[in-house]
Image (cartoon, rainbow, N blue to C red):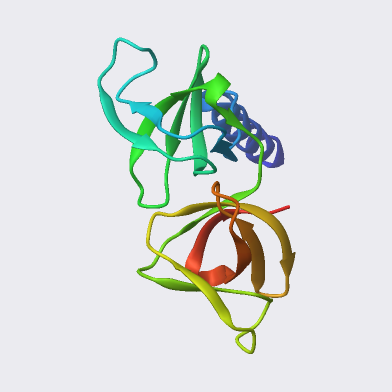
Length: 151
């Protein structure tokens, strides 16, 4: 009976490994502005939308030189591997947020960001993330209002 249980456990593990496509769920971000997001893994597929620089993407699958991903709104698409890198980045997941001069509500608001705006994540301090927009603006945003990954 003990041998049967071990065999079942091993078979379950091997089945899970066999179903894996070799890509762990990982986060990457776009490295340039106006990146074409496609419906399939190649330039012959339709362009679904364009993403800005520092857009975080959760990688689901790799096929050749293309990644299938999910974004902060659960939308999926395909992007070429040359257009992404492991650069910590965040996107605003709620309506308007305040970006402040320091990590905390006591610091003044220096600008606002709307849903879908992406940032490079520079560093964390508690529940706050220092972010940098592609236009060079930097500040601190509350982590729970963002989606993505930091160092």
